[in-house]
Image (cartoon, rainbow, N blue to C red; front, side, top):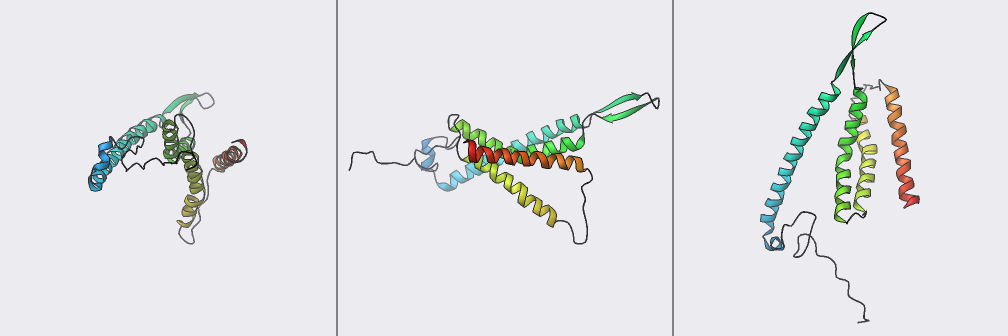
Length: 183
């Protein structure tokens, strides 16, 4: 040997000594049969999905209550009270759509940063860029293909669409600058 220490890769999560963020619970777990570990992990995963579903339902109840707020205002021109929605439903819908479609990537990035001792890794930015590309290309393609032949769909409120497009393009340009030039 030339005096340099040999490179020993870290063990995989499923091997003895391997560690993930939460699993395995102990080093003993690596000696369990794979079928037992699979059942345990799938059960924990399903339980986690159930918890996410409960939290999402509660969140949506609160959002619906907030978005559904109405205000009665006296209109001096007509001499009558008019009812107005406090929130613009289109803006609220777009915000929920953005949050719902980006939440998994954001959570994955936060977990990676926590695991790496508050240093960035490759996984978070990669999933965010991949998800953005998927949302832009695949979801829009499916929406276009899903319209039956001979039918036409039109955007009724072009102002909201234009705002969405402008800010989406600014976000992609910002992402390009960050990934290519700043870091």
